[in-house]
Length: 562
Image (cartoon, rainbow, N blue to C red; front, side, top):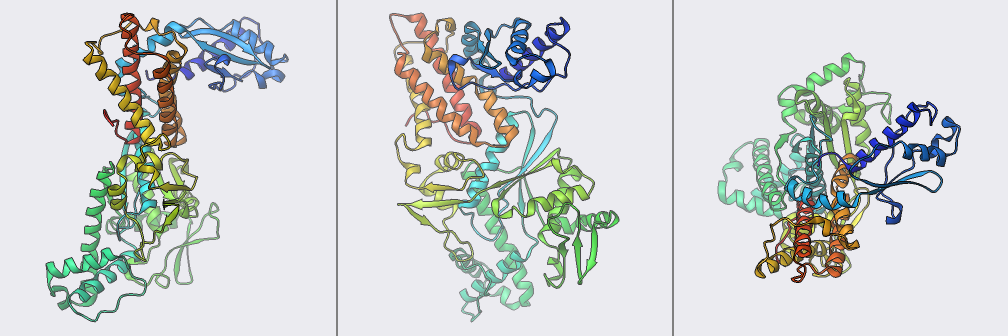
């Protein structure tokens, strides 16, 4: 089931249009792109296309007349039940009932690959996400980044792309020095030294704990080193500790990375200097005011600083964030050869996005190979009161605390219920509420109910894995459930092309609701109608598979019991 029914419908319409032209029923004109939609009203069919509406001028006839000729010349197809012209010139198609019910077995045959496509076949893409500074625990904003990036990677893989997940470790900037100074101060204080805490230091309690642990582990060893050397060493150790904690907490959230890429490697390898030479040779580098500037007609400013000893005095920290971004983009697109480099960034980085694209173009690469997804921030609420987050001030709720209080499934599902460009509130109390108001509970409960139905049937002696006669599935609620299940591949395609995994949470809620209607209207195990019961058990298994598959793409578990 790798070809979308929607695309097959579009192909039929194109075939009908071409045949009508070949036979003289329609004049010659350029075939437009065929749009196929799902009508909101079932009596308008399963699919509808407005393709004939804009053709009146080219064909010199009304859209309804064009549509009538297209419909008349559409070749027969096993999945077509009825095709008709509607309204001002829409083409409406209803699926063949026998073909529709036969898809239940096709879904079961596809198994866990149901919903997989070949949209991205032969294309390698990298999703780089989270990439929070390694200077403290992950907070809720980074958690939204994590679930968006991970779910998107899963969707793209289902759509046929070869996907790699990457965490970019920001370990070459000034924040690393500030963090090292903070750790050193807490370490020295833990040993009884009167060490002042840096004004721009990291004030979270985790830094105090880290300093104490290092004091216990190392004693006064670092007090006997030159201060600069000690700050660097303790900073490196602190970053390693933070990264280890991040890895574990992200794994507990269900997020694992293929690569942890270190920013400092861009400079240690000489890649940044090479990129600087490339840009200079192409006329995109100017030196003025004791600084190195990147210039491009695509920028929102005359030029942007990428290196300056005045702005950033530390010798090893002179390049700016954009400098690293330029080298990193080259590494992704050229050194490692990804067809697409997808970045998941907070909306506060919106100003950086066009600059990265401008730099990619300046390097002679296609900027469309870079996709930057900007997500809005998330606010945590408890009892209607916002829980503040500030890594510097030490007043943030961490991923670890979220996991302990709420658990991974509510975190992932809830944070994927909004479009990425919508700011959202995360209600910590609602996330664990066992009611239909809680979307993750509602969907997971639907899966647990399906599992319970199948267990009950086994207890009654039914072979739930046996094939049934799907043609007996004629009740409107049965057919509605089949139709809803068949939407999954289209939802995967939509989420992949729009890079918007929230479509899957919407679909999961809709599928759970349609199954609940089926369960309400159709008693599954009907002893007096064994053939119908077997068909409904088969349908129930297909619904279970489809819902579990959807939850799996979201990284959410499908519980057997609740």
